[in-house]
Image 1 (spheres, rainbow, N blue to C red):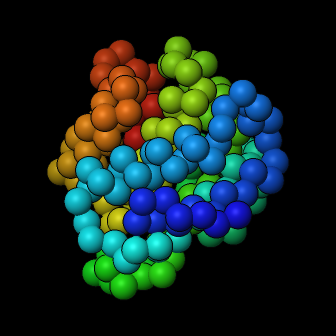
Image 2 (cartoon, rainbow, N blue to C red):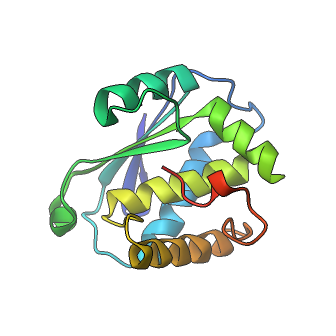
Amino acid sequence: MTKAMYELSLDLDQSAGDWPADTDWEELSRTALAAAAGRAGLALKPGAVVSILLTDDAAVRAINRQWRAKDAPTNVLSFQSVSPDRLTEAPALGDIVLACETVRREAQEAGIAFAAHATHLIVHGFLHLLGFDHEEDAEAERMEALETAILADLGIADPYAEPAPEHMARPA
């Protein structure tokens, strides 16, 4: 379903995976996106749509194989609808896909709440939609600092603080 969220709209699809029923995934997603949009400080078209797919490792593996030529599941995938220079006019910003089993395993390994890790990955994926990246060290530092600030706004601890497992350093 698509509903207005501050200046954004959310299209959430929980198609597969054992996502905890005690979490309101729509509210969690709205809160994460609103915090990220506000902190990123970019002008976005009012009502621009962000699509989030909450699914399982098998589906993410298939998507990852098809679009990134990587035959493995990953925690989060992001697909931009427009280039960052067109964000202010874009009716849709893109898609974020999370893999339940991978998110759960990483949260357990890091000793953090599942919902907190999922929130981090939604924020991370959304920043990719806005054009942020972590391929170069300077880009990674900028993106991680922004993620950390957004998560702090939401009361979630810095996911990059030591000692974090190596796989937690940079979501896909």
